[in-house]
Image (tube, rainbow, N blue to C red; front, side):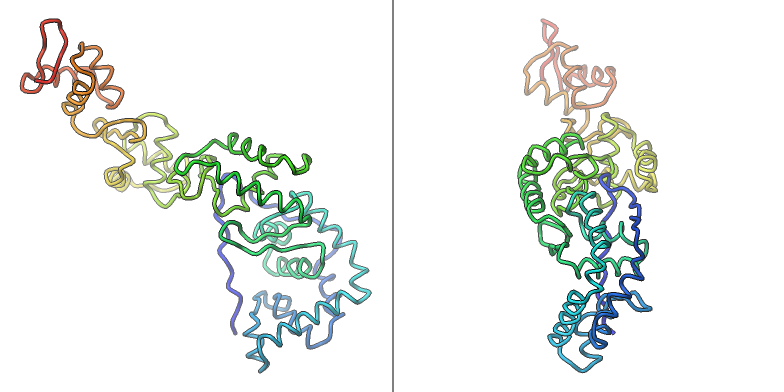
Length: 362
């Protein structure tokens, strides 16, 4: 039997909370059983297998059902469609309108448009329950499903106009984001709000805004609740070196590699061996060794190389300078003690002291 392949659940980010399953006045299992009874027997069997409504929760493909019944894929699709139409035209469907209205109201409370994975997780506590609600969503015209694209995850909505505005706003927001940089959560929400002028203000709360942001495949967040394009290094978290980058960035100052490993465990609940962390810092150009075991971010302007090379670069760029000025400039790009700079500065093989007390390259 060929089964519908389940897509992996999206990774949890700072924008996603643990879902709380919705509560309704009706019993979905009883409702689905009554609705299925309104379809012809052959169509009912197809619907049960297509939506995973039987004893097993696996959903079967059109091809698998056709192979078992020795009919074509297209014929199975026709039987399925006829079965759904038969239910929609039966009085039991009209009697269930209150339940459908309740589901639609719940989706509106979520922001009118919700990613399929999140919506089903909120509607059902297990796969069987989620299959029942998927069947109900497909059955009623109040619910519209948008297929997954390169830009958006698959999603359901109950208001086409609002959905269209949100899609357009997300596209504009993405275009406005820098390629590599990330924004704080507050900043990205403010930008998003600026793009949502045509959307009902009733939906503009933080929870709904984050839910809408999660529809985009091109915008994401990292464990520090920073947002940006999913291709940005600070968003695309793949391993220890990426967690190390976030840890040092959060610290805002150079860190010893041992402290970086500890911070990864504290901040992200990821086990990071000290030796492994050190190796990752050495190999990645985003980090620069600025002291004994101390690493900073290259983007901060810190320079690699021994202190002597940094002093030479400072003097070549700024010309002859007094001792204190040299120390200030070197410490902007290297995390070293004053004495270390002075020892190098007083080496006559590389630097000379002029009569006015300034130093220059020898």
